[in-house]
Image 1: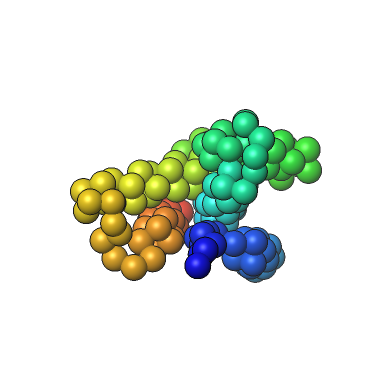
Image 2: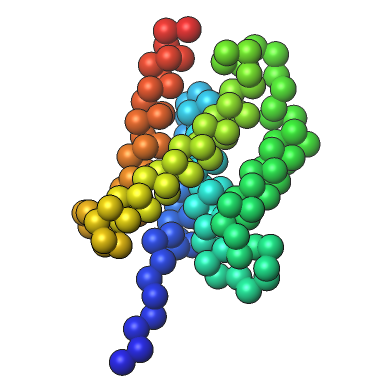
Amino acid sequence: MFVKSAYATCPVCIVTVGGGLFIAKKLGIDDLLVSIWISGLNTTLGFWIASRTKRFIFRNPVITSLILYGLTVGYLIYSKQIGHAGNTFWNIDKILLGMSLGMFIFFLAIFIDKFLRYKNGGKVVFFYQKVIIPVLMLVVTTVLFSFLLKIK
């Protein structure tokens, strides 16, 4: 009667979101909006890796997420996808801004999830809370910035 723990993020979900982001980019969706989700994907992947690894440094999900953020930014700089003139919002590169926003929003969502659990005696307030809160917050951020991009 040993039950294996379920993980909220799975490799299939990660691959699906990654493929969706690639398609979104090819469809011409703004870099700022796509990079919010890329960072959400990186943060999810960081938490998933931390839950699966035995190595000390990678067991901390925040450190693992920051490493993935750095690797992604490094790759985007190397492939010359960051730093294009005119690809800025508030005088910040859209990809860097979106990735920073995505990571901050995801960390905030995790804090809100843990706070709600703490206030509710260690139990979730609603089913799939751990998944719904980050996704909802990323959606709200994406919609907000899509309107801000149209105003600009």
